[in-house]
Structure formats: structure tokens, C-alpha cells
Length: 256
Image 1 (tube, rainbow, N blue to C red):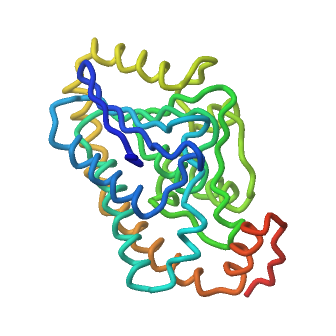
Image 2 (cartoon, helix red, strand yellow; image 1 turned 180 degrees about the vertical axis):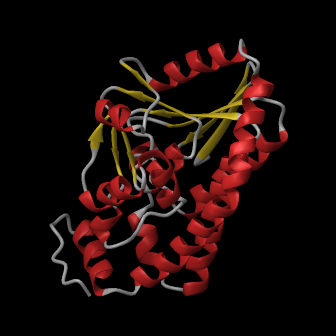
Image 3 (cartoon, rainbow, N blue to C red; image 1 turned 90 degrees about the vertical axis):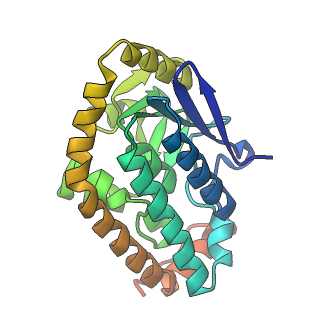
């Protein structure tokens, strides 16, 4: 089974995370397939890209079982390099990108959603970073995208809160552009149809002008996230956080 699907229709490429049984948790193979699909989209002539998740969630974030298995530092760094490539390619795509969010967009899943020009969300959708629950920090450019949308102070508070916010709250604070009571993918397709009647080349050119100026800053954040995540993985709190998650209990952190 493909863990990431790509469908093209009427000038729109749809990339779908396809692990519905795990709420589209992102493991190494999913990352690699996602990068492959983005590279395919990069080369095609569709001007609009929709990213979504199969089933009841956009993505529950990085696969916890995978995190437990990544003991080798080189292997972990390779995973982070793949995340860096995904983030940069998505950010610099000369196309309009739309995240269609049903259910939860959490952790790395939220970083992916925020790396889009529009987020269309079902009104019952939930958004949260939640990395601190296993004593890690946001990755996939999460720090950068939160700063861009919320400002530094509010971004810090959101990361530290360990809370998920509703679709309505997410719209009010600047996460979500369009809130809908229908399936988010249908809402994204409707937006794509509207955009196709607009001067898309002019719209995309403005996007690239802004993103070119910010690209090196995003690279800086991705590099710091890689360094910080490697550092956090060696902490006692992270080991406790992973154990607690797998054992379905509340972690007992010691600040070590």
C-alpha cells in the first residue's frame, strides 16, 4: 500500500497521506514517499496543490514507534535531512498550496499544514504541536511557520501549552484561512476552482517574491531544529515521554 498517494485532476495535484489506521502518523517510509510525491508535483504543470490525509485525520504527527527505533545518530540526522528537503520544497513550490484538514493536525502534521498558502479546515478540526508531551521540540520548520503566523511570543506559548485548539480558534488566531462544515477536501477543491479563475501566474509570482526573501531564514530554523531535536533525544525526559506514551500514562518529567 502506498503511504502517500498523488492524484492529478483538472490542473490540481492532490497529495494524500495514506495511513488512516494510524491517523496518518508519519514514519520514515512516509517521509520518503512524501518527498518523492512533492518532487513529482514540482515537475508537473498543475498550478494548485492540495495536501490532505486519508480517513479521520490530517496527520497525528511523527510516528512514536519510529522515534523509539531511531537510536543511531546518523539515521536520525538522515530523517531530519529528509524533513528539511520536504519543508524547503513545499515552501518554494511555484504553485498555490492548500492544506485540507479534517480531524487533527498535530506535531509534524501541523508543521506540514502550516507550510501552505491556505489552510481549509473542517469546523471540528483540531490543531496542536504537542511535541513537549514527549520532551521534544517542533520540527519540519514548525518554529518558523508558527512565528510567521503568530509572532514569536504567541508561538512560544502555543508550543509550550500542550493544548489542541479548535478550528474556530485556529481561524481566529491565524492558522486557518477557511473554515467549513463540509469535508475539508471538498472545501479545498472549491477554493482551487475559485483560484483557477484568478490570474494565477501573478499570484504565484508574489508568493515567490516573499518566499525567496525568507528561504534562508527557514533553512536556519530547520538546521537549529535538527540540532535541538538530536540534543533532546538524549534527555531522560524524552525517554520517559516515549515510555509514557506507549504505556498510555501521564509522563513524569524531571527537567533532565
